[in-house]
Image 1: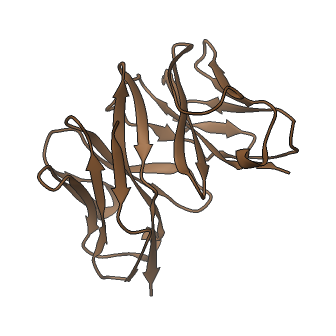
Image 2: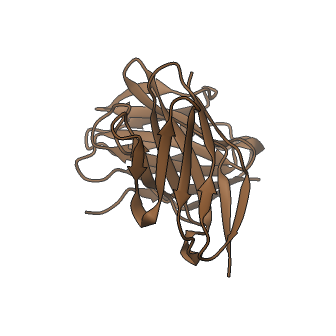
Length: 115
Length: 114
């Protein structure tokens, strides 16, 4: 079974500084990986996804993630944090069971932006 | 195009009761998945439906069930509610079933069991 581990439950950065949210995955085959964001009282929104094309994936709102097979990592980064980035972020791996999709979520990282 | 809608948004029930939650996917989407989100367990997969058939099921007891209608709308039912069923229940839709398809999430139904 596939799994993901988000290494930080809470990350706090100052506005305008870089953001790094760390994620390691475990997969017996080439995985499909996603980052989702959840703002308070809102549903999940897809930031970006990796599906074995380019290893550097660009997403919405200036976020990007790099797939590193040797390190089994898929860290999310953003060069400059904005106050609106404050939210919960989930690293997700897609598990395939008889052709059916099942998303396996990490425990989440709460990102706080300090003014 | 309208997003995924879930009704009701909030529910309060007591132990032993049953509850039905509804999800309307994005127009044209035929796959609907359900997830439970709690502070302790995080986000966990419940089940996935495609063309009115359950394709995949997570590790939840039989009290949790669902179905999908011919118009792709889906319902999930929880019988004999327990305190631990208090959670945010999220529905997600995608155009087709499959491991790489983007899922679009609704705002969720927050269920409180007293």
